[in-house]
Image: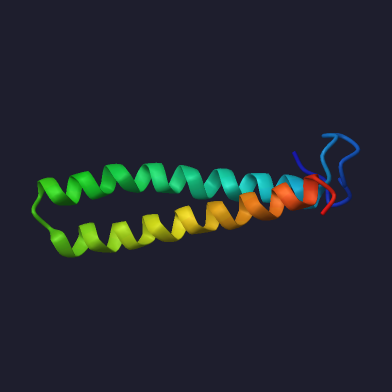
Length: 78
């Protein structure tokens, strides 16, 4: 259950920080999941799909790194 007015009073974490944490976790989770999909495509000798998933995985890793850097900066007061 979420509230349109929750700004950290319930969770202790401001929405903007929580959202960044969620984003990083989602990117990392996606990169892990795509590893399985890449392996499946390789087992099926489908290099076109494996390449697509590798590109998506790289994008997910990049998103995670960008999110982590921004979160690190925000939490350190920078």
